[in-house]
Image (cartoon, rainbow, N blue to C red):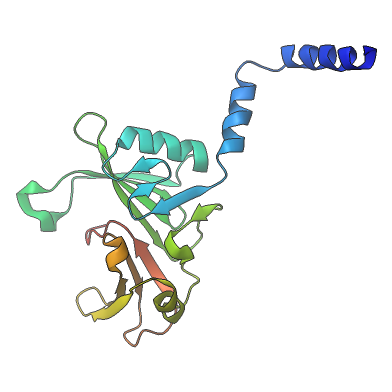
Length: 186
């Protein structure tokens, strides 16, 4: 009985010396074990959801971006071009539309290069996956060569927003581009 009381008191005293907010940081970091990118969300923020909430969550999970860039919008969209904010962590780019209150999350893109650790992608297809393996793994996958963008696009009706691409016309090689928000002016 004395030993139990000793451990309870020792634990209470140790907790009294933990800096304010430290246990909240420890709890939040233990909950966040990576980042899921889906056809409809970045982590816990859905596409169309708050840009402010998305950026805050991304900074908590991934740290500060390697690059943050604001754009007036795509010139191909004409007079209805909407401003964009691009947040880049290695090969990951998250696109936000910063206007209108909290703004909105547009989507994400992964290109070849260093992907942040803990990033989980749809169907586990990454830029180290071959195009042929992606075609076998993605349910209902169809593919075609796009002469304009020089990309071998893979799509599926099960994830209408998603596009995976290789850069070889014959469909060989690796996936070089993955997105849930294709905007040719990125």
